[in-house]
Length: 180
Image 1 (cartoon, helix red, strand yellow):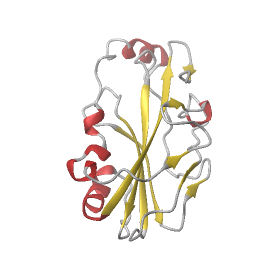
Image 2: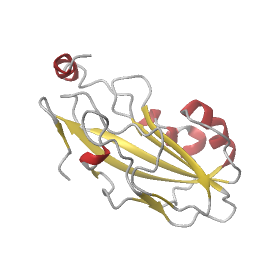
Image 3: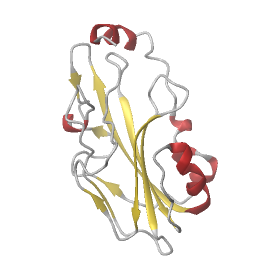
Image 4: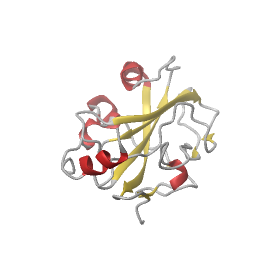
């Protein structure tokens, strides 16, 4: 799709959004979990702008941000991380990345997430939230590259959760991180 056409699509769709309630962490089973995992990044703070390096292809460098977290709670053997944009003009949030690993891994370096699709909202659509959702699991989740494939394992085996939100917006002419 031409960049010029994309610039004109964002404005009329400004009020349309998948919504907070459609995020994985707001699934009724998962929302009941204790939110005790402290997910952090040296690249951005909670509810602050993502770095342009984390923006998607054609906008930024498409590097997943550096992420780290404290030890998982007792009983956790694995973790799962999902990144979703609830502000897309679709029925369901857009999945920007999935990663899983053993409990002894407590960080991901910048660019370490394979399959990461960085922030790239429609120009003029307004500020988008990129919600990094971390879950502690008491069993290995198995291979999962989609939200749908991971949900059964999360519902059965998640014991705690954490969240970190990054913000990004594109104006009419170019990508622009949101001022904190």
